[in-house]
Amino acid sequence: MAVRVLAVRFPFARTLCLALALGTAGLAPAAAQQVEPPTPPGKQKKLPEAPAKLPKVDRTKNLDFLFGALKAAPDDVSAKHVEARIWAIWLQTPSDTASLLMARAKTAVDAQKIDVAIKLLDSVIKLRPDYIEAWNRRATLYYMQNDYGRSLADIQQVLIREPRHFGALAGLGMIMQEVGDEKRALEAYRKALAVNPHLEKIPDQVKALTEKVEGRDI
Image 1 (cartoon, rainbow, N blue to C red):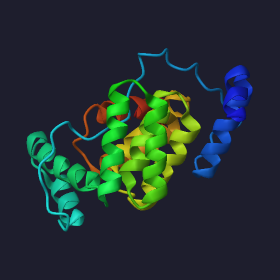
Image 2 (cartoon, helix red, strand yellow):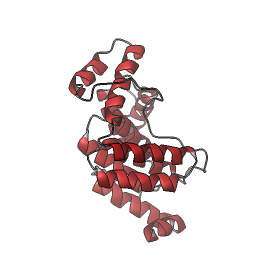
Image 3 (cartoon, rainbow, N blue to C red):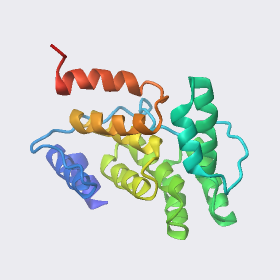
């Protein structure tokens, strides 16, 4: 808490805290890079999340098969069906207690009680640290609070457990782009597209960042 207060009052401290967090994730930005001012409350963008409606899936469904199908999908409509099945598997809770806590966290978010939701997700992670969607949801909430350091730390935990998590990879790109590290934003977006070529808006970001980071073809 003391670090958070210090970061709010002193922009340089905020930059330093973020740099330390990025270093932990193996993504330390260039020296003296400045963090952009936080987005005004109520205007935050959200990290990529699961669609509102998900199909019922078998817990034993092979993710490797689905990721292969996602890459081979002939069109966006087919890809969305496969993507939804992947999200459904990721979201399957490992226990009734975890399921209840996740439901309460969602209710808290809907009521704009973000701090309460984070505490509930803390409990899920403590109970089942192998459940990646608890880490992913908490990363999203930290992002909504402009707490990029903690959001990045949680994204790292997601990617340790599931390197193909295209939502976390896209979220990583968004954070890197917002703090001005366009090179690493481009790297993250490219990794996300390598897993899921049908992500919305990400190809446009890759095109724009490629021109800025690597220059136009002569």
